[in-house]
Structures are given as C-alpha cells and as structure tokens.
Length: 302
Image (cartoon, rainbow, N blue to C red; front, side, top):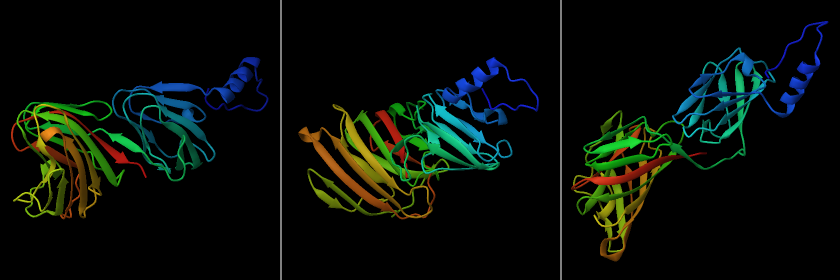
C-alpha cells in the first residue's frame, strides 16, 4: 500500500498494521500498460510497466518530498524511458529501461530526483536497443518490432529515422540480408528524413578485404560501401559502428562485413564523414536489385 498518514488519537487497527508490515517486505504494485505520469500516491510503491510498445514514465515536481522513494520496473518487451517532466532526473545508468530493467527513484527534494538503476555502477556499459521513430522503404516492405529490430523484404532501400539522439554518443548497427542480384550495399547518413548526398564528404575511406586493400571510395564520394559483392545464395552479414553521428561535427564510421563470394569473403571499411550535420538516421541500399533481411541499432550506454 502507499504511505499512510495518521492523525492524533486515531486508532490503528490490526488489519492496518498487518498491511503496513507486509508493505515493508512486499511493496504495493501498480501495473501500467501505457505511458504513465507519476502521482503522489506512488511514493513507497512499485510501478511496473508492461507494454509491447515503447512507453514513458514521467516525473513531475511538487508531488514528492525529500526522502521519498519508489521502485520502477519494466517487464514489457517495449523500452520504457523515465522522462523528466517538470522535475529533474539524474542517473549514472540509463533512463531507457529494456525488458526486466528497473531501479529506485529517490527524491532529494520536491523537484530533484536520482534514479539508481539495479546492477549499474558509477561507470556502466552495455548496448541498448533503439526503436526507430519510423522506417521508410524505397520498395517492398519494412517494419520495426517493439524492441527495434527492423525486418525488410524486396527493398530497394531502407531508411531508419530517429535512431541517433542525445541519449548516446556512439552506436552499433548489425544486419544480415540476401540480395536479389549480386551487388554492393551502400550507406548514407540522413537528417530530418533526408539523405545527405554532399559530394566529397566521406574522406580517408579505406577498404581492406580478402582480395585487396583499396584506398579511396566511390567516384561520387557521397556514400559509404558497407558490403562488397553481396550475393543471392547465402546470407551476408555486416556490423557497423557510428561515432558521434548526432553531434554537428565529423562522424566516424567503421564496418566489418562478410559474405560467401569466392568461398568466403570479408572486408573492413572505414571513413570520416566530414559534414558538420546532426544526423538522426541513415539509409542502406543495394547498387542493383533489392535486399531482404533484418537490421538492429543499439546505443552504447556510457
């Protein structure tokens, strides 16, 4: 049960005492299935989010007093983000709670709180799955599930929007796919729903493969090659690192990819994108044909 208030000369019943004692060991639980704003009665209780979609728990000021605590837990597949409304929320962990993530919210004053994430030390780490705000497909189909994995089929291009934010500095993208035609897979960074096609923007690009080491890049130099010689027979893989894409400064990109060309082919490619643009997404596309597969983006938790 929530924290109780008693008045002078009030009779405290045995039932009330039993309930209060039980709450010392088992907090009163309220389960939410949609985004929720905390209320004063939540002090001393456990708020559990259970949703397959992304949700938020909003923290406002003047509802809790210094010393108040409550427990937050996400058991749903959708990421639940603790959001500062009119109060402040600080943490050494992450405020984006993946499934089964949680912790204690402590108030040092009516408008200032600290979230103590379970199992997170002062310097934390880990990969946090990110759900794009939208997925755009040039042709074919493409959708994202509740934990951010994007599935696409027969796509001439796949664009992810809203995956780079101020929550993280660096990101990882992993994908596996097949192609309708033997070709290369390309990438462009994008902002506000538009790909950046500025010429001569990917500099110091170097590709090292089982066949050769090649400096330079595509003739137009306004895109980066992710996968060389992807095929129609076996699944092709790529792991991509983005360094500071959301900051209006140069962006570093590094890719490790492999496929089955010539009995086994791998490549490592990297470049610096020299445009001082704050990007929130990217597009992948084959030079020829269409691609079918899955792709996920993760933020590196600091």
